Image 1: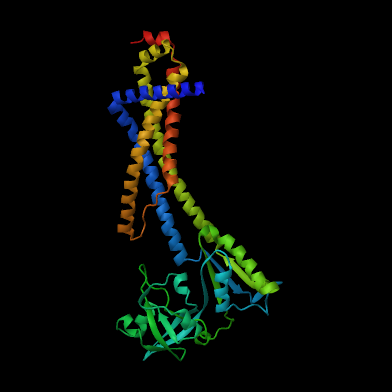
Image 2 (image 1 turned 90 degrees about the vertical axis):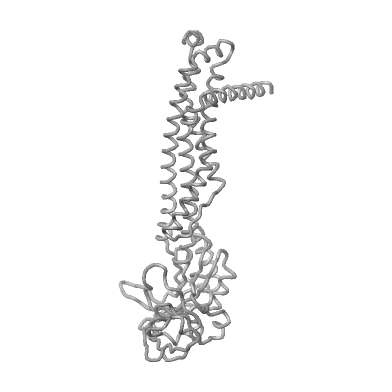
Length: 420
């Protein structure tokens, strides 16, 4: 216990002596701290901006891609000896199956049952072939469909096979014949010869033209709206995981649930995930963060070299002081600790200032993203980012302060006192 108290007292004394020395050479200390400030600021800004981009990208991926989706479709054929052989007795998923999957399968964030095909659409003398998607009402949340005016159909309308339809903006423009696309809301059009009321029109895409003449209608009772096809069409059940990392787990849970529901028939269902796109997305996010972290680490290393140069100069200037301290009983470990404390003090102060500067830099950087790229990106600050930045700065101080500290500790008292 006594030894511990002596060590603590020695450490405090070394810190006091080091702090006095840093205050004596204010300009040199400030300049040596600059590299650490810049490095920590870059590290904090890079990580918080990257985490913000990661959060935005994940939301975008969940909304506009199938990377987080697990898709279930009937397997209608297989290849045997190079020939396509039809399969019979496969399960056909229904809207009730979709609701039950959402309630019973762990890890399902959203669900949708969809069936897509071409359909003839008419209004007065205007005609078009639309890509019609029959779905459950949950598709609106599954893909974050943006309705410019009107609304999407409801679960009740799906249950009662309501004769309603939602038009894509481009299709509505085609049918409106020079009028505003929203003019069609509340009017009746014909889809494959059957009357449907337009209850909503989607917003036009923010970037580029709308690729298809799209329309959406309730899946129950809507199969007759699709044009005949040579190959049979069956609904696809899509389940969305809560995150990219949870996709593989969700796929396993889905397979277990299907086995309970259909027994041996589960072999006649295809359960697919976008494995390659999923892996590419994960790697891109990780590589971006590692690259920015590496660049920030290099800046910190440059700051560490500056600290080492300053401490070497301090050793040369304070040789006589070191000799006197050793002559009156200071050990080499005390001298080494003094200079290490000075190094860690410089990097510690620099990390605090750099952390604050990094927050402002991250705010400014994401503001430019929102201004120029119109992307709703905001910095995300995790506790781990601050701890990592502080630990990195202290580590740099210890690494680059070790050589000057050891050099000071190895000075012989007589030689050190004799120097002017």
